[in-house]
Amino acid sequence: MNNGGGTEGEEISFYLKITQESETKADAGQVTGGKVNFSEGALFFADASDDFVRVVRITNNLVTGTVSAAELESGYLFSGISPSAVKVYVIGGYDFSNYTSIANKSALDAITVTLKDESDYEFGVSNATLAGSGDILPVGATTNQSWHIAAPAEASHEAYVEVKPLIARWEIESVGTKTGADIDNNWVLEGIYIDNIYYASTLFGDYTSSSSLPTPNWFEYKWTAAGDTYDKYNRLDASSQYSTPDWNPILFDDGSYNSDGTVNPNGTSLADAVADGTSKTGAEIVVVPENGAWAYNVFADAGNVPNIVLHFSNVTLKSTGQLRENKTMDALVGQPGYSHSAGDYDGVAFLTVTGYRENGAPVLVEGGHVYVISDLFFDEDDLRDEPKGPEDPNNPDPGKLDVWVQIKLMEWTVVPVEPEFN
Image (cartoon, rainbow, N blue to C red):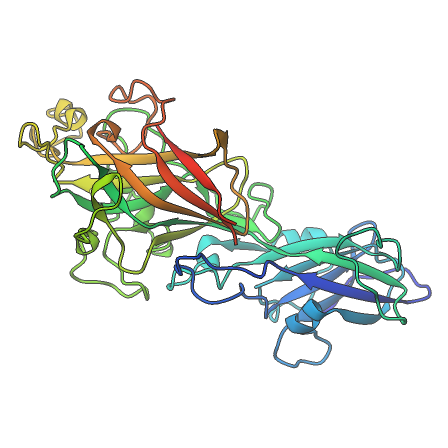
């Protein structure tokens, strides 16, 4: 890969050490593998104008002029670096072998990745892209830093870079009805959908400025009128974002895909994963997934949080012995565009997670964190007739905390938090 030009002068010897989080999997074992993939990537040495004066590929393929991830984690001495280099950018988990030239930071920022690129059919984090940067300083200028180690005698300059994943991860270990809920145990979890997300990102986590990003890049199914969200969460409807193959099964589960990405011809819901026959404290019955957790990788934007929408059917009230009435859809019978009969949607209900709190404070989504929802318990008052919508008349108090669940926040560190529903 060619690099941009730099000013002439005495070359410097530069010592670089890369670190990444050593713990990259959930304690329950949902995330497979060890560290996220750092075997491919590149280093970009930039001058004060963010033009690249040297580019070095990171690879384990023993290609001339490259460096391996293991060497960088141990510390590596680069010779012959232009004295105009003032900063180094690092990308891991991305293959630059097909790039012949990246001249500057703007060209690097034009490269994008999608959530499909960041996911794998084992629902792990092995494909996560890592990014970081650091200033190039004279040896000794950073001795007050806790990370500092003695650089080789040949080094005149040094830098330390911490690389972090672009993505965060959500895992749901169980869903259940609260003890004493007015819901019998025959309900079916039909699907789980992830909403309020960015689908594409630059290599440094910019979701909006690059012209190469899809439009719109921010995906959210807003509630604007009764009944308008049903088809948007239906994978079999062509207008649904979840009908797009790239999103299957990365951002939703409905039983139609196996864990290896192959089609499950018998899977029309998550019914096969429903009753484990045992109750957890606080719940009468729980639904547990086949592989430890329903898991989703999302780009980590601290200003926004993903919504988790759960779709239920056959919700029957103990007090009446009848299916829970879906008043929203029954009210639309006979309206233009709605051909169903009264009662067709009875028993269909949704639960939407819209926020997460730790000790009362909102949780900001950060890369390299795994947010584990251990127990998602609900009762009849927590359900809504439609997937989304704080304007929904069936949800007159969107600010209330509807359901308490325990979430373990993992950096790859456990912190209990509470989610919000509206």
